[in-house]
Image (cartoon, rainbow, N blue to C red; front, side, top):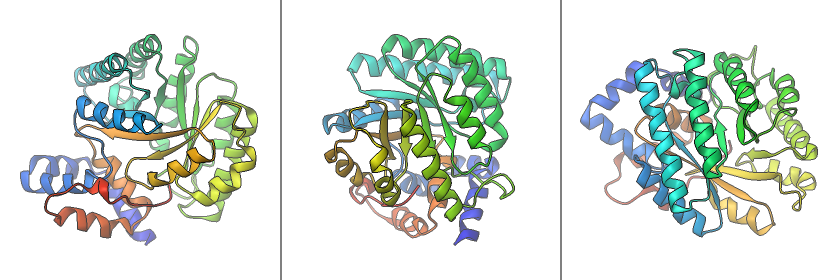
Length: 320
């Protein structure tokens, strides 16, 4: 199973294969059937419609326009405009949401100053709209760049959060630094292809212990945080540290992955959030979701061969 997971994570990073699938109508159609389970639409309007339904159920939402590793400055700036449009339309519709992004989507791997400039534009827009802005995690080779950008944004803004990965050995040191900054800290286990020299293996006792330790530290600190996991056993262990009157934490789960558990957490008095990705650049994201639990390959095969219907009616459970 772990070999299968590693293979899928390698496919996730294959930009040539991603382009080939996107260019082939037949392959694109099959792949979209798989992706649709995890993706909230391909346009801003579709994502906002999905968010409205979830808001009506009492859930906060994070909206993430997918895309990564943009290597063209002009395209990165154009993609920034999509995020700005998302923020404007969400505010106009009164959507209860935060806006999330990969910094490499808006130019950080072209030039870190370009990434910072585009991120600053979005931070200004989301601040004016009263929305949180969340920076996503990427591969460990980009962690320093992400934290550099976040640090500079925090010099002007207090609503910009960042995602950290419990898998990475460096996270203990990074978390200590982030606790001194404003903005929500989102704790995920981490799904990227990483060597064991710098990251705990997926599914290991070491990773579970690390996540539990970091989540406990975050909850006890009173810092704004998101506990982003579908692991109900972990959430049960964290219950004594979740002070429901604190207003500083939330439990977050991903669209298509066990979000039927969110009403249970809400009924226990915990604030909940559902993370919705949208757009056409879903290759990396979907591959990583499947790699987290290779048994999802069987569901992917079912989705790829289905005729009609919508996979959202058949939610997949799983552990992030």
